Figure (cartoon, rainbow, N blue to C red):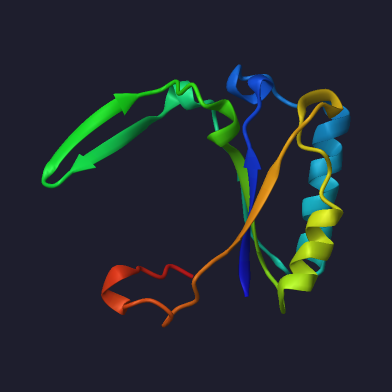
Length: 129
């Protein structure tokens, strides 16, 4: 089962503030542990929303909205993709995740189960793994 650990943005991450040495070391150690356990598929941080855009669809019409976006708590600042045996194993890993907030402030992580190949109509998905 594949799970995405979604790091929600904070005011700091949206301002482009990078984690300090201690936080970076903690995150690096966590990801190294995931890799040694053979469950890490991918992990990365995202630049602030000011460097991105959204595409709004209305039937055949498309409208581009440039960042930044205002709903900071709804934005994604980074992610980790893991493959584990089940929900409880994923929970155990996430419980060990370092606080992603700048300087130990408040942060939120969301965890989502990915669809596996074959669960969706094959014409609706592209599997790169």
